[in-house]
Length: 241
Image (tube, rainbow, N blue to C red; front, top):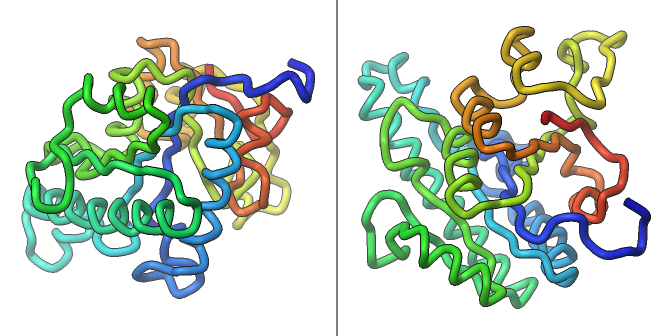
């Protein structure tokens, strides 16, 4: 697609990691990142694109880490889901304060005092009205990652693409932080990613995207303007299709 012809996608599912919210501190929520990501989402919203978001909770608590301190996996996963709600509320506040975008948080765990319950048709209606929709609390079930939640919600709302925001430029054949000779893979199939053990997203998420023909674009969210550039169809990041 040529640049300047408008957005390539009408409806996107943006997957953000909880770690990104922590900034340089590694824990908690960094206000400067909230302002930054709000402005990035605003740029996409101004293109007329419908934006849904799923956020991890790793900046506060990871379910799999609970076992190290004697918390059973299911309980730990529920704790991790609650962490994603905290991040979702923080992003909602930032989007409405900095970007002036009406935003709704829909939670898979019922907590009506702070978020709407997740109902697929309601989520789609919010998107159609130009609101950013943040899906919180994962799938509402333990033993599923927020990657899987992102793939599931993308399928449910008929998103055109899953945009996996990372701190690197795309998919590599090995960890670029540890291997200077790591090679960027521009395009790969779902099956190749699974068979080669490339951790783009977990296997359940990849399978969901594969079965529903939802492409995944992995890109560097830390480079200003990358989110809107990807949405406009520029050659940025790596694609799983």
